Length: 410
Image 1 (cartoon, helix red, strand yellow):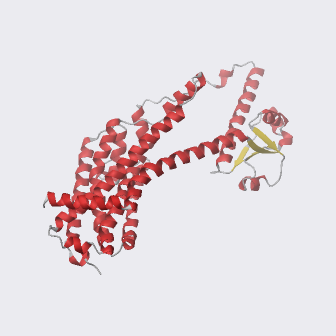
Image 2 (spheres, helix red, strand yellow):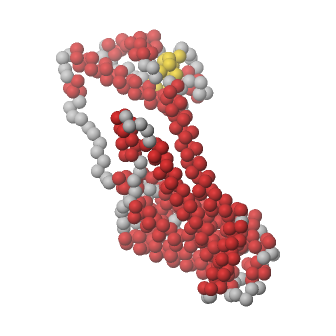
Image 3 (cartoon, helix red, strand yellow):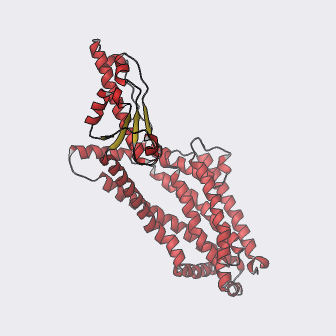
């Protein structure tokens, strides 16, 4: 193995890839431009839809309103609600998105409450529809306040203090540090995203450097060069690995900048006391991670990037054309997605068994490191097993390049 020859092949292939528009788009343009636009665009649209839904007010139909004049009076006085006339097809209207929510009351609702009974009330809404869900939440909040008011009135009539029905106060208190909360909240999503980017960044260069060259007729010319095939293999492999790592770096840098700008815009505002309170609440809501965890994540991703690059080169080498290589390499992304998704499932914990499962072990250990938890025994086991898998894939790739029936498959 001649490192000088490998570097010559690597330099040549890297220049060719930088001239390829598809590689530039998949490695640089999409991570640095498209993804932030998607994040900002999605966030902006969702914020606008939710704000508009809240500002419009909730159209609510009360079924059985005749027996609840006091409740109707309080409901109509609330500016958040717009009471519409009662109709028999209220369920169908909700399903057709013509009505946000309906309140179904029993007959003689006020009379039943006056007798000390507890009549059942139903809030009907369209589950999964944003506007209907917001309306249902607003209506439930109104009913809870109305019920509390009735309870306070009963206590007052009997000469009892409001605290009579609350023997003690209950409050939640988080004792976990912010980085553990951030790691538990969305820590599993970050390694999942890195795994997908690592795979997609290596896929197109791997296909172009194997099946693409076969299709263009340049593979035979390269094989006739005086350098050994192992040097050619490692030159191509390093090119694919560079594209994979570059995709991760560009994507994570872009997302970090996007997140920073987004937080500044979100936390920005006037210097009023209310704005300061909103800033404090928003800052508390933003996830926090252990900075050393990000370094650990990139270190653990390195052998997996090698594994992906070697596997994609090997599989793409079997194809006779770029299109055929796409049909082979495309479904392989499921091999990366499925274990990464399992790593995001609640209850999936890092153990000696899961530490040996490729991709899943990376997803689990990265989530732990982002939370500030460093299980060094598992980290060593995962890094070692990942390196072993990467070496096996790289050896298989070299063997495939030395098979004439694969290299010049008709």
